[in-house]
Image 1 (spheres, one colour):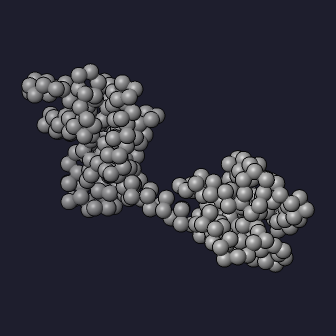
Image 2 (image 1 turned 90 degrees about the horizontal axis):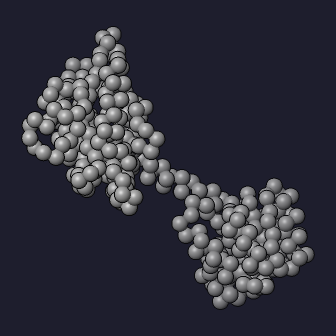
Length: 315
């Protein structure tokens, strides 16, 4: 473990450093608050042992700075105050400043080891908690079957990219696709085969997008591709690449039957005069996808602003 010692007495500082290093820790040391703070920001140690009284700012101030900097950090830190003060008021002030524990001078190595080990135990628990929270957040944004972003994550990403593209005066494209005749896969071959179809579609979507694009499961057998910076032609090209790749795939059912799958695609973009919000953009892609279904499935259609049926042949 990386440990920072902040102790203005050079003899005590050397003794602490030698002892902690003999226990296998990596140790950084400082003899004043300013240097300790600079080392902390650079090395981000997990455990800090600081004297109360030091040149520059004191131990409680170092605690306050560490806590302020560590408020939303994924790197937990445990702070032990080293002090000759043992009054209730002093200890309360130290804990209020952000200390986790204290050692009263003079101390022996047995007490030091016990308190350092207690700190290591708490740090390990905090790291487990952080990891569990990150995993829960990841799962809340991920489709469990395909591993793609789920609808919630897609909406958040769309909103984020909408703001960024507007600031940069760039278009954003979306492609919505729906697996053709998906209900037949489930009804005739079972949900296990249906799940395999969705997984294969997801893999094709991931393999077809450009760097910086992302794809997610919009719901059921629908998938959404988000293409930051893409105009309608580029969006249609990505959709066609996905369509061709998917059309070439085959899946074998448990009884040995080989199946082909296809999907219908609708593309839309905010380029030109189509300055709609992203959720309206998804609705436009959905409309274009409906046109692709109407036209016979397994094709790409682009959204055109006019409702004239003749324009439905575009794409």
